[in-house]
Image 1: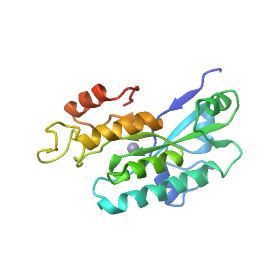
Image 2 (image 1 turned 180 degrees about the vertical axis):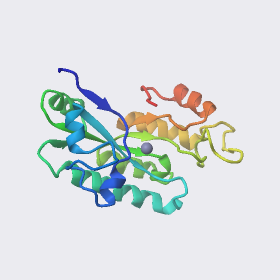
Image 3 (image 1 turned 90 degrees about the vertical axis):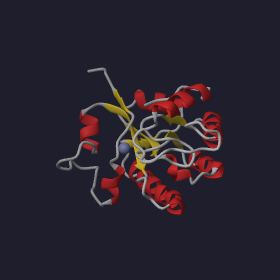
Length: 197
Ligand SMILES: [Zn+2]
């Protein structure tokens, strides 16, 4: 069996934060070290999901705590390693280790701050889902309640455009899942680099 799997999303950090030991088989969940190895998963992206009802000034801290938990997990076994770069991913692919990549699910995490986005890149975050089930000030959700209103009358505000530019510059891949259709097309127009969903 030569194939290997790269999986771009799991929310399993919450099990780690609940105190479950994902180094051992855990009943009724999909991602633990024995299953990752059995499934020949070379890279598993762990996302810190920030619920849309998180208070605006608590989202950054909430995300930090999640990243800390993933960091500790990635360092807790010799068969695991945090992956940040293409070179590190190549090394992982030629080893028997399981790579872990950091993602944020919901741009609420950056609290409208490019400095905070920059901080998360320094913490090795490489993917950010821009929005979740509710509109934010700078981007329209596909399931948001109420009308989305922005400074430029579009579904991605001028701050949203700056955030896409900064993500392009920093090397954080925009994940367009949960964006409204109009916001999706705005992101496609704006981003100079590929996006994922
Ligand atoms: Zn998720």
